[in-house]
Length: 61
Image (cartoon, rainbow, N blue to C red; front, side, top):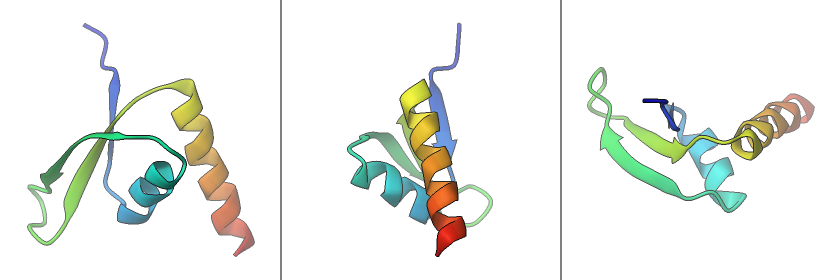
């Protein structure tokens, strides 16, 4: 079965994706660091493109 989700470990990236109208599928505690969370989104080419735009935006700031 093909994996159709992506795990995001950065809160800012997850926030950027939600700001751009992507809905998280789930949110769970990070097993490596109890102070952090992981965010799960449905993977798609559009989501990957939006992630790339965040990297470009971050480079400008």
